[in-house]
Length: 239
Ligand SMILES: Nc1nc2c(c(=O)[nH]1)N[C@H]1C(S)=C(S)[C@@H](COP(=O)(O)O)O[C@H]1N2
Ligand SMILES: [Mo]
Image 1 (tube, helix red, strand yellow):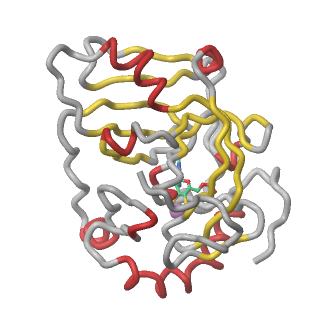
Image 2 (tube, rainbow, N blue to C red):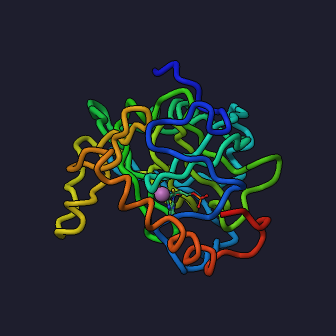
């Protein structure tokens, strides 16, 4: 694990990142509002397990808990600093619930995290089991709101924001890397298989610094578009 600090108000941000004031809702959902959450919401676990199962969100309260202050780095170049998350380390969730249910002889290589809105992230098992990876239901002392991933989201601070799937619906245990998506645009801006922010692994096929200027030009319009779909619950943020 890297020893680089993960907090710092822009004093020590990863390469090519700039701090933003506040914590904008900033995802690939653009103008879509946060997805509705079913009353009996549970996280489904499927893939290389003997039988799929569902973990009600309330169950997380009974697992080992951790508080973690970290920054969130969007691949577009902004970083929200000093976010105080609280939840269950993914490694604990894995050890307590998933590992005992694995198919015998399964060699797990990847975990796929899917959100209620269709977003998904693919994470190597090593990255998923990093100490700092959480299943978080609290941010800054309050339950997560719709903008930031209610009722529970992944938080992986050492990887670009697109890994931190919000509104977590399903965890798929894989024994091989899932096939990458196939359209041309996906191939150009495909997510990086590791997505580590300190190594600037922004995309699979392009060097990180090359894509900075394109994103920089897009940050303001994308933020405006994302804000159209937010629930209005966060405080106004400066540009
Ligand atoms: N379900 C879901 N999770 C998501 C996204 C999304 O569109 N849907 N966007 C990702 C991206 S690109 C980023 S940068 C972060 C932004 O987190 P925030 O909206 O809480 O600021 O969420 C990530 N998780
Ligand atoms: Mo992002």
